[in-house]
Length: 142
Image (cartoon, rainbow, N blue to C red; front, side, top):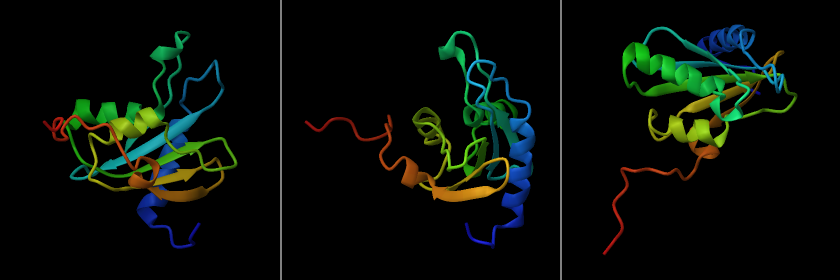
């Protein structure tokens, strides 16, 4: 990781750590926190994973933050994302979260991954989801 991490990302990392501490993960014990910055919105939006005994009802930290943002501000474009998990290696968002991000981002934006101690890696969105399902693509050729 480069020693020149922007101050805004360092603040978002700290914000994501606070959100991680509020995660509800009684089944997996895998606590995840997230902070998303949206273009045109001055504040960071937090998210944490919230598990449910019916595993399909579980929501990831990243989608939690995104859904909160839509409820508060309407659809906005993602500027950057910071995700933290208690892991030693970078743990990027799951494919479901990446697919949902596809609806709210430009073609590319940074996703910073950290753990409880530090930021570990910066990915660009398209590195993690190079090809997405997009209902706006042209229809089948005839």
